Image 1 (cartoon, rainbow, N blue to C red):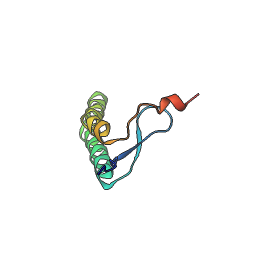
Image 2: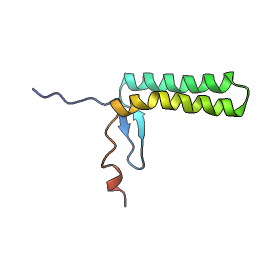
Image 3: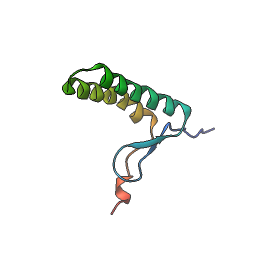
Length: 80
């Protein structure tokens, strides 16, 4: 019995990365990531600290996108 894996994030058709969430877990991750970005942006005084907070939020959640998103390999080969 083989079960099909359900991905949380859809791979982008062009370029590298993931686009919209496909499940409620994906939407929860998006909400947490953008909430962290908003918190870093609002609570920091300097531009450097704001950018560091944005990068930190993205880097913390990147493994989740990688593990639970559609595979990225082969998507770029379709482009001409």
